[in-house]
Length: 336
Image (cartoon, rainbow, N blue to C red):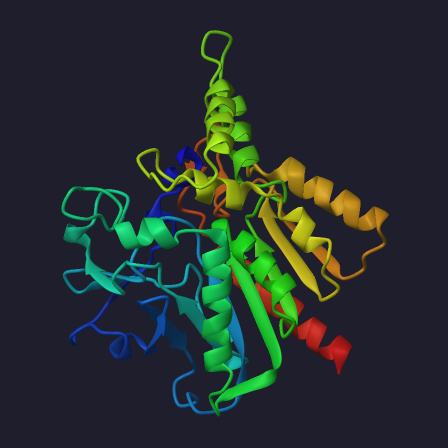
């Protein structure tokens, strides 16, 4: 799917130099595997050093799209697992992230394509990934992971934070509806009207009188609706995946009465739809929503230069994560 493929993995990467052999433990993670639908689910948990066994709530983060390993190495460099610095969050939470289905936990940069994607020997997305890259699969799998983790003695069950960015925002929004143990939701960089609307919005911004790009997405959508169970991924995503992620998440969000934080850059393609969500929640007098707009920032919270290009020197993810923590701390005080 075009909209997903333009999101470069480099936007989420920070490199750290390690002198020892690289594995999850050397990076400060606990690594777990659990079976799910005949596959192994790769789970990483980040805790404050020395407090791995201390009872804390879980902060579950669902990353964006595409078949990318959680840990990518290049010589002795390691690309960050989370897009933000975790130091402040681990003071209060155990952070959880889960790998993509059918994708290895770790991979060397040279084994991936230019977009950091893990492909099979035929240079296509792995079959297991294609078959399981579906919204409902992620939702039920992630809930199974949380149920398993919540039985650990170091997990405080009184609070559960779900956070997701881009595709991950849709996943956690639906999880929050289906998983009643969720206490706080962070919806970042999502489109409340669904994936197909982001694709169209992007194309509208680029098209000209002689090159009407949006027609491509309308034709793509019309064809996908004819084959809702199609699992052919030659176009980037299967029709089934596209349809699932294009169902407007606003329908999930409006059902929620727990605290919801919506974080977004105002230069994101989805901004008009997020603004509409805010208008709707105000009209419904839903006081549980907070909207944090990062003015002049794009989908991944980078600034936009005057010439319209992305300013990659202005990395704002760490500020976004600190804003999340402030909001979470405010919620904790308000509910205790």
